[in-house]
Image (tube, rainbow, N blue to C red; front, top):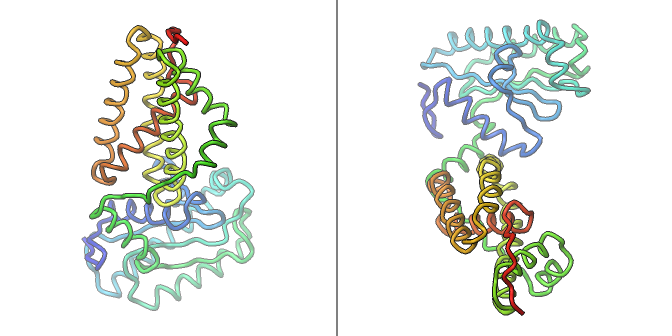
Length: 307
């Protein structure tokens, strides 16, 4: 285990934490490479023309011993660029690798940087089709991901509460009058509510949920992409069940809607209670239900509206 001011790391959790940091640093341009590929290619992640590899020793080594281990890591993984050039080309597409970046907690021997420069020159001369002419071999220590580690550590201690999202009356009316998905909400409540007053009240409430939900998710995706992806997985996993259930419970639409709210809120709490504060979880729940009403998985088929 390697002890740092940002936490203690092993080979296992170092790779996981660095991946989170790179996701936060590069946002949507970063993608982690699945385990079944990286074992072959020696690449843990990609962001545009840059590829990343992680390494953390299990114990503290002397500077000379650590240099030998890092040198072996650099030599072995760079050699995979040659061995698996065809597979890496498929992975990169038309993009050539401009930087191979090794991220490790500590580099305390200048000979390691000298070795990296030597290998950089060597690989430029190989003229590999997957490497750019200015290909670089770069070594980074924990300071490279320190801001992201600090943010992640803080997030684990303080539950996320995104800034309140407010909608102006003008913007609300614009969306209500021009968005077909929002009109779906009115149409569906028109089927099952008994008065125009209730229809309008429920429609405006769920339009508010819907629009705030969109804005909240945009902010979540921007600031916490990993958690946003986890939310999307939860939404997708429940969508078919909701669609099927809404078709089987039309005689008790109010009970079904209430139970759907209850179950979705429970799922969100089970998944995100350690990360999100209760207010944000409830806002996500309301936004999710309203999105299903707006986008059709959740529907009511019996018309009981009396004008």
